[in-house]
Amino acid sequence: MIQFGTGGWRAIIGDEFTKANIRILSKALAMKMEDEGVADQGLCIGYDRRFLSKEAVMWACEVFAAEEIRCLFVNKSSPTPLIMYYVLAHDLPYGMMVTASHNPAIYNGFKVFTRGGRDATEEQTKDIEKYIALVEENQAAGKAIETVPYDKAKEDGLVVEFNPLNEYIDSIISQIDMKAIRDKGLRVALDPMYGVSQTSLKTILSIARCEVETIHERHDTLFGGKLPAPNARTLRSLQNYVLDRYCDIGIATDGDADRIGVIDDTGKFLHPNDILVLLYYYLVKYKGWSGPVVRNVATTHMLDRVAQSFGQTCYEVPVGFKHISSKMQATDAIIGGESSGGLTVKGHIHGKDGIYAASLLVEMIAVTGKKLSEIAKDIEKEYGAIYMEERDYKFTPERKNEIHRILMEDKLLPKLPYAIERVSYLDGCKVYFKNGGWIIARFSGTEPLLRIFCEMDTEEQAVELCGIFEEFLEC
Figure (cartoon, rainbow, N blue to C red):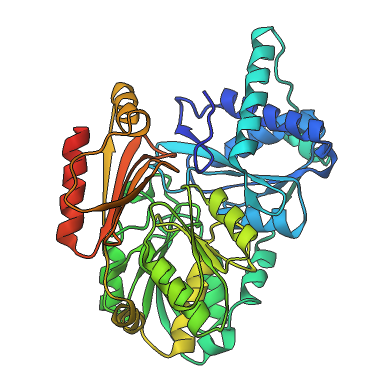
């Protein structure tokens, strides 16, 4: 029942996210560490503000303690990138984070990180699943999972509670032009969406002498009744706040602070695609960096246009940030990201970090001396406009099998009104058109959804194509 998707293992609380399954997963990883000869090096583990997150860490620690594997437990709800940073900075073999990221409040889960602070690769998660199967076999044969009571494990030094937040914050401050920000006196609105970013971001921006105003910062495991995903639907309060308080930028992060959403100075929601393009353009044009960019199959091809104009390459990978970070390392890319709001920059951690991305955006406003809306206009004037339509559909297991057969096995397509250049099955079914547009249909790796993304020169074209696919697949 424990299966990893593109963003770790996520499950509904009380259904599959249970104490029993958390112990199975922990035992499996402990066995993997022992077989790899790294058990003596320990691991770092943290949690966000979701229901049962802290308790889940304690249950996991009790299993690792029984295997005499030391757990460095960040004893305060923390951002996911903090755990990734600590694994990287202290050369640990593994790290774990209890979170379901931007999923609805009824979900929780675990993310696993490997040496270098990276998301576990597909090969590594499949390996963990093999150990999980072995643990379940042992249980069926009557072999129970051993545990050590949490307080006893702590007393024996097998659980060490600590908080490396200052170290993480200092690492970001060292990479941001704080002087440029201090000289501008910017006003920033922050919406952590009841998540875990406010302490880190408020500290960084306050040190840079920004005026920071925060909404939705209290602890609420139901996230105010909204999805903790920073998108156009969930950030209307932030939009109004930016306009009412004349803020230079509005910044939102998802539940575990690895994704970002942005409201510009005019109150406009900037799609994650726009943020990626803005930052890549800034790094190359204003900071003088040189290098390629990496995006997934469902992320804007505007990055390709910008990269080509600077004599660089834009690389395409499957959905899942582990693919982005791996490709960035292989190609020495300077930035990589996805249309769901996650991005990373060369020289920082090898995974998503909404806190660092937010700090870099504020730096961009200060260094360029331009408002976000003005920089966006500069890019549109130079590279043209492009429009993306996104749609999600729920399905039954039977319909999922049928849709998979149509697209991925029989490789059928509807009749399309634009000339096709090629079709890719790298991750889902993606059709590339000769006019530069594209459409993709793929199953989410984190939720039971079929996602359709289409990017064309006009909104009418994108809406038309999504409608054609929707009718063809009977969504």
